Length: 284
Image 1 (tube, rainbow, N blue to C red):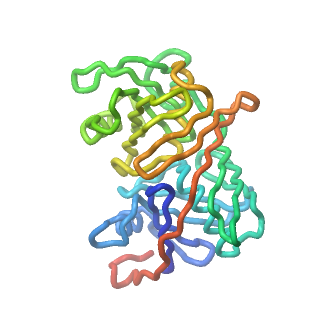
Image 2: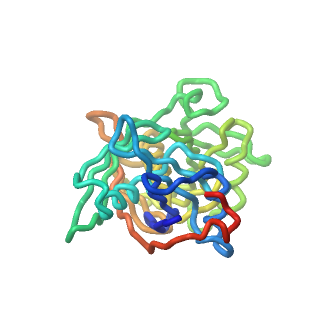
Image 3: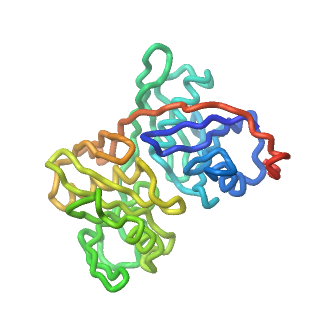
């Protein structure tokens, strides 16, 4: 099986062109390729497939084999993959995901995609739709009990669920402790991605993320979008800001005109290779 490893701000996945490759058990394959000692090493697996409604379809699996609805960093890499490898000649494509259809606009330099802007759609704030087992029209700075501590969270879905916690010092916050407690909190029936955000100014946020099914990662595109929305809802920032993540920066804008969130950031190809599935003990 041929594959390409790519990353968006260090949020790395193994990408497989499923127009050509057959993957029978993507969950098992995701667990194998993600292993940084015995596999390729990644945060998960992304399949690029044909679509009946869009230019392409994306399926994304975390490193524990669970399938996620959407990944902003992965979607940018999909755009780069299909353009750089000649699967499309267009610099704007539609992408089918479990979180709906996304529109991706590519910046092309010297024949290669360098940055991608993704229309991530409108944020979802209704608790039942996120989902969060809390009453009311939204969850904005609501205290929940986490291991005996009252933590204010703001919950947003960008096609996948996020709980944002605003902290004074993101760099030294115990993400490895609080992250899994939030991810698996009983209020979140489908688990949740947890973001820990420090407001630096009205247009700059520092953020760390604990991703559902993957642990702490260097970047999360949907998490950056959810964090900007949460910061704006709490009156902490404007509707446009630069998000500082461990892997780099993303530009996020929550448009007042159409209520959609736009994410702009880089996409990088690391290397391509071929995996012997039989030797790895995999069916595909």
